[in-house]
Length: 209
Ligand code: ADP
Ligand code: AMP
Image (tube, rainbow, N blue to C red):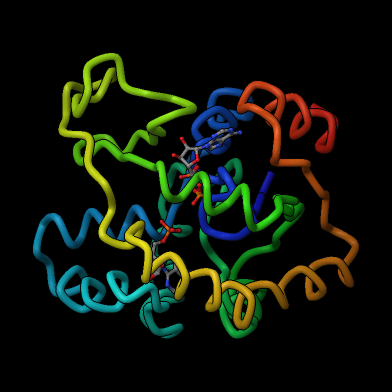
């Protein structure tokens, strides 16, 4: 199944995707994670993305589309994929349609105040990318990942000004995708407000799995 996770930053897309990988046996492809890995490695892509991401802006469509096209051409994608954080603009969605057939779009239904609470407390493992939260999902030892022992840090784009900017960018550039995909009849809405286990149940019900 070719799936897109659509929702504002902090909606819980990455967290649900980590669970959905086990349920659906599909690879989780997060463009944000690809950019963060490139930044950590100091590759040309990472150097290009760094300032843009820290300012809460979007990396240009051409770069991002090229990256996803290459990723979807890899062998592990044969049985489908979970795309998290892409597409984020109408041109990205149009480009995607030309090289892959999206079957379902999962729309994360969540109010702004919940998003702000989640982004403000998000912590991430620098090594494996696992998401934590200072209130809802604390690492057992502060600053240390439960899964791989990596350093748990606050993303630069989870600082207050960048959060505001990212929500503005979401409303202006990404939210129009809700109507774009709803018009195609492939959208399913998932109530993303409850605790993670309940969101997983809502997701399974919405997809009929
Ligand atoms: P996104 O990938 O949509 O930007 P994340 O999956 O990174 O969002 O989640 C943002 C923050 O909210 C993380 O700190 C995560 O631990 C926390 N979180 C995710 N889902 C839930 C939930 N259902 N209830 C409470 N906290 C959550
Ligand atoms: P995320 O991990 O999905 O919150 O993404 C983090 C950041 O990476 C975003 O704020 C953007 O700067 C960049 N990014 C991720 N996905 C895209 C995309 N599809 N288009 C443009 N920029 C992206």
